[in-house]
Length: 585
Image (cartoon, rainbow, N blue to C red; front, side, top):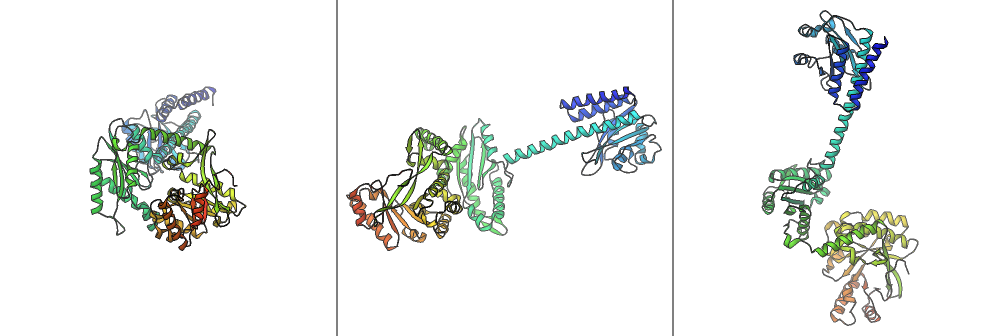
C-alpha cells in the first residue's frame, strides 16, 4: 500500500482518537469517523449498525449522510443470507464486499432499498466485541458498481476496529454509570420495601429550609412476629405494613429508617395528631391479612413540625412516647420538650469524653472487694467502670447518662466483661459484673460470655451478673428468657440495689436468683434508722427462707457492720473493707 494511503489512515486514526481522548460523545465520534471515511471514498455513504442483544436485529447507530427514510428502511434488519452486506457480515462474522447490489443474491431481501437509494455497491466489515463475537458492522456504500481497493479494504478494517474501541469505551462507561446508580440506590433506598431510607431522608431534610413535618412510626411487637413466623414472613409483614401506610397516609413521603420503623415526611405543617389517630382507628378496624391470618397492628409514634432540627425533635418525641409504653404517641412541643441548655451541653461534653476515652483505652474496670461475713475475708470482687481523663478518675455517675443516650452501654459492658475476666483468670475468685437492659436487648450475652470464659479459662460459676431490680421486676419476656438461659449455663445472678422500688418477690423466685444486694440507702444508716433496719430485716428474712444469699452495700463504718452481722447478712461491700482499685487486693 502506498505511503500516502497509509498516511491518510494514520491521520484518520489520530483525529478520531483525539476526540476519544477528549471524551467527545461517542455518537459524535462515530459520525466523524463516517464522514472521514466518506471523504476517502468519494460518492459514498458510511454507516455503523449495531445488533440488538434482545432481538438479534440490526439498526443504524450512526449514518450522518444517509437520509432519514434510508435509516428507517434499514431498521430491524435481520442478519441472514439475503440480508445485504451488513446482514451477511454479522451472520458470517467476516468481511462482505458486494460490487453489484442489483444482482448479488446476498442483497435479495434489500433489493428495493438498493434501487430506491441508488446503492450500487456495499462493502461491510463486522464489528466484534472483546470475545470476537460480531455485534454490528461498519460499511461503505457507493453510488457506483465497484469493488474495494486494498486501501479501502484497509480503511474498512481500521474503521471497524475504531468502532469497536469507541463502543467498548461507551459500554464500559454505561456499565459504570449503571453500577453508580445501583450503589446510590443501595445507599438511599431500602432493598426490601423499595422505600427511600434514613440516609435519603436526612438529605431531604437538610435540603429543605421551609417548615416541614415529620412523623416517626415504630411497630409494636414486631420482634415477636419475626420470632414466631420467621424472618421471611417478617419481611412480607413489613412490606404489607408499608403498603398500608402508603394508602392511609398518601400526603406524606414515606421512608423506612429502621427494621420496624417508618418515617413520614410532609412539606409544611401537618396535623400529625389527626394523622396518627386516623391511622390508629383504621388499623383497629382493619387487621392486616397475610396468608389468611389476621394481625392487629399497633404502633408507637413521635412527631414534630419545625423549620430546623425536625428529625431530632421527632426522635425526642418518639423517646417520650416509648417511655410511656407501647401504642402511645407524642408530638414535640418546644416549650415542654426542649431540654435544659446546661443539660444538653453537659451531655455533649461527656459524650465526647466517653467516645475519646473508649478509643484510647481509658475506660477500665476498678475492683471492689466483697467480704464474706462468716470467714471475715474478701471472697469476691465487683467490677466497677471508671473513666480516666486529665489525671482524674470519674465514676459512672458522671457519664452513665451520656453512655445510655449514645447507645454505648453494651460497648462498655463488653469491655468490662473482657477486662474483668482477664483479671481473675487463673484464680478461683468470683467476679460480679453489671448488666443493663440495653445488653439484654442486643441479645449478645450468652455467646460473648461463653467466648470470654473459654478464652480466659474462667468457670461460669465464677461470674455473677448483676441486674437492676427493675429489669427483673418489670422485664420484657425476652429478657427474662435470656436470663434463664444464662443461668442454665452456670452463671450466677444477683439483683442489684434491691428494695429501691419494685420488690417483685415472685419474679425473683422465678429467676432463681443467687444473691440480693440490699440497696445502699437502707444500709448506710441501718444502725440509727429504724425504717431502714426493718426493711433490711424483711429482705433478709425473705432471702434466707428462699435460699438466696444477701449482700449489704455501702458498709462504711463498724457500727453499720455490726448490725449487718446481727441480721445475718452473708456479705458486706463498702469502703470499710475495700475501696475500688485498678487491681485486686
